[in-house]
Length: 67
Image (cartoon, rainbow, N blue to C red; front, side):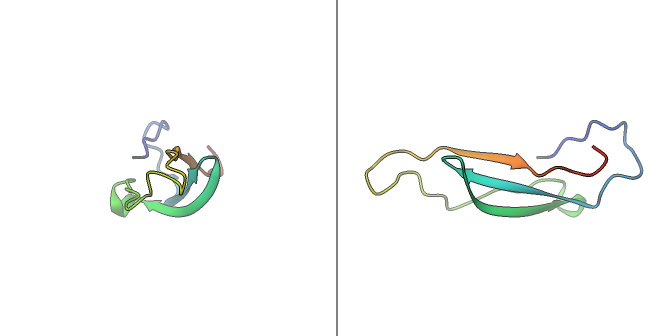
């Protein structure tokens, strides 16, 4: 979920992009918008690699102009 810290600015962008990283490598980029409540859920993610080692997932927001 995206939480804005801009005092409800009226010039807020209509969308942002976030990267899903698996062990530090981008595996998916998703657009998040006001229409979906600034929320997105990544689903059906593998928990383990072929050797049984657990993956670590992180989400990183791409830079937004003006913020």
